[in-house]
Image 1 (tube, rainbow, N blue to C red):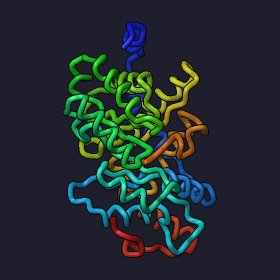
Image 2: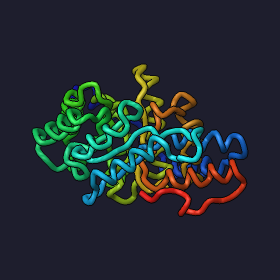
Image 3: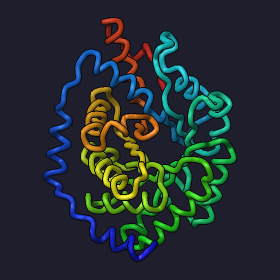
Image 4: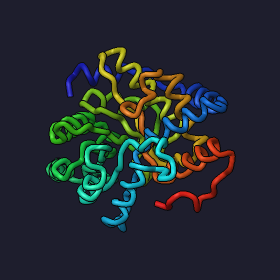
Length: 301
């Protein structure tokens, strides 16, 4: 990590916690109706990284998830596909055989979710996921190194994983629930972007709190300001705890108001979720038919 980067991180202004949380709460009250709501729901569906990260995952389960990602509502061909399927590296081939090149396949790597492994293991984990067919890598930073002030180690590991990822996009998971302060989240966001992250991601989904509206707002401010400073656009992925259409729409409002319309695209904003897609589908069916479909009208993941 360069001396200029460390100095730049040290110069980042402190986060006004009260102001940040108040703005997130205010944006979260925005109401979207009728055709705008239909558009927002379809956009949210197209932004979902449909995810399963359980020790009990099987080839059959991930194949079924991949089919669902391709055709979320088999009764309605106008329903958009999800953005990607996110799985452990050993499950990547089973997803790829279903989706071909029609969807992205994301793999968590680098000793997910703890990040506690030697760099050689992390790089081998990444290379294996790419070789298996992943075109997106979701890595976790070493939170212990970050919190102890070893920013150079964190930076160097992201750079190395980015190189090992080859042409695959790299999503860097900050695990914001363990970073303790908003100031740390801002610093980690800038550190990851400088090291080459294509996306910055809130959480593994294994730690609470996971994604929150204030944290995502802060990260959206970071990618907006980073593009102004460098000309390079970086995406944002909140993950964990986003379960309802109402919540997803709140996040889309924040994206639009904070980062801008350029980020209202699956290439630049994703939801890491498992149960969110079902609620989006139920709300979509209600808007199209006027009837509310219960949970038994959609597949359980």
